[in-house]
Image (cartoon, rainbow, N blue to C red):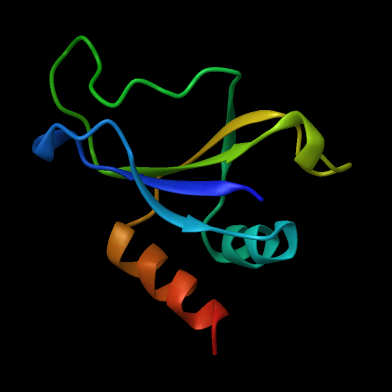
Length: 92
């Protein structure tokens, strides 16, 4: 199952696991919070110019791929509070 991480550069965390989602749940989340494929390596939390904005990352392992999702990492630049609300709404 895909993993969703919250990354907060100001807190110097490298990505805190926030949720383990099914593929259909990922699709529901990215309808409101678009995801951009960033490759096979977890994106850098802090770039060379200092801190960046908070963001989230969804990771897909090779066995989780579909016609929509490929193996690797997707970045979501949405507000983490709104993203958290979307995750909580999945269980309702």
